[in-house]
Image 1 (cartoon, rainbow, N blue to C red):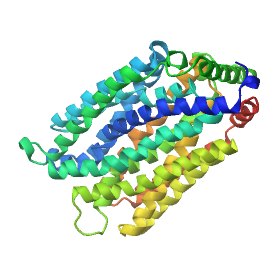
Image 2 (image 1 turned 120 degrees about the vertical axis):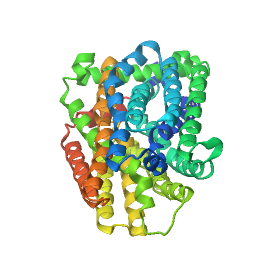
Image 3 (image 1 turned 45 degrees about the vertical axis):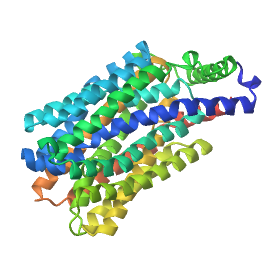
Image 4 (image 1 turned 60 degrees about the horizontal axis):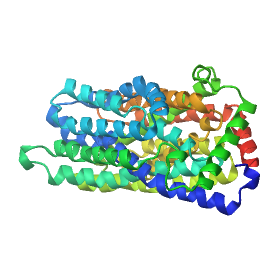
Length: 444
C-alpha cells in the first residue's frame, strides 16, 4: 500500500491498535526482566553479610552478569530473527526465571559469580530483541514513543519492585528457615516463567501473524516499513551482517551506550546501599524500597515526555546528549553533598531522569540507519558492547568504596566523567541519522 493512498485516520487507528496489543505485554516482560536483573542490589543488604561478600566481591558479582550477556548477545538476536520473536523471547524469559530463582542457593563467592554469569547468558538477546521486534511494526517516526512506553518498564519495575523487594526481605525473613534474600530470589523469579508462557501464547512474530489486524492494516504497516527500508538503501548500503560492523557509527554508538550503561548500573545496583547509608536515622528494608522508588518514579514521568518530544521534533542527538548532561549534574551533586538526605535524593532523581531520558532517545539513532540482518547484528552489538558497562559500573563503585573505606565521592566523580565522554561522542556523530529520519518522515 502506497503511503499516498493511506488516510490519516486509518494510519492512526492502525498504529494505536498495534500499540494496544503489543506494548502492555512487552512492558510486562521487561518489568519482570528488570526486577530479576537488579534485585541483587536489595539482596546485597542481607546477602553480603550472610555470605561474607565484600563490596568489591559484590560489585564484581553483580557486574559479571553482563559478561555472559556480552558473549551471547549477537548470536541470540540473530536466532530471534530466524526462528521468530514469539518462541525466542519466551525461551529467554523462562530460562532466566529459573536461573534467577536458583540464586537463592548461592552459598559463597564462587556460586554467586557462577549464577550471576548464567543469568546473563540466559537473558542475552532480550532487550535488543525487543528493539528489533519493534522495527517490524513501527516506522522510525513513531519508534521513539513506542520505545519510551516499553522502557518505562525499567523505571516502573524499580518503582514497584523496590518496595516489594524490601517487603519480602523484611517480612519473609526466617520463614521456612530461609533468609529474606533467598525468598526474594525465589518469589521474583517465578513471574518471569509465567510471563514467558504468556508470550508463547500471545505474541505474534510480525504483522502477517497478527490475527487482530485487518488486511488493510497489515498492508499499511508493511507498505510503510518497505518504503522506509528503501529510503535507507538510498542513503546507505550497509545491510549485511558483516557490513554492520564496518560502520563507524555502530562502534561509536557502542561506546556511548557503554558509558550510559556503566552509569546506569553503577547507580542502580548500589542505590539501596546509598540510601541505607543516608543520614535519615534507622531505616528498615521496606523504607529503603519506598525511597528507592522516588528517583525511578520521577524518571518514568520524564522519559515518556522526552520520547514524545523527540518524535515531534525529529531530533535525536541533542535529546540523547541532554539526558547525559543531567546524569553529570546528578553524580556531581551526589559527590558534593555526602550523606545529606534531601540533596542526595535530588541527585539520585537527576541521575535516574537523565539516564532514562537518554535511553529512550538513544535507540532511535541506530535503528534509523540499520535495517534487515544488519539491524539484528548492529543493535545486538551496540547493546552487548555497551552492556559491558554493566560489568564495569558496579565493579568500579565496589572497588573505589573498598579503597576509600566506604566513601563513594570519588566514584561519583568518575561516573560524571564517563557520562561526559558519552555526551561528547554523541554530539560529534555524523548527521546521517537525522537526515534519514527527515527523509522518511517526509515520505509518510
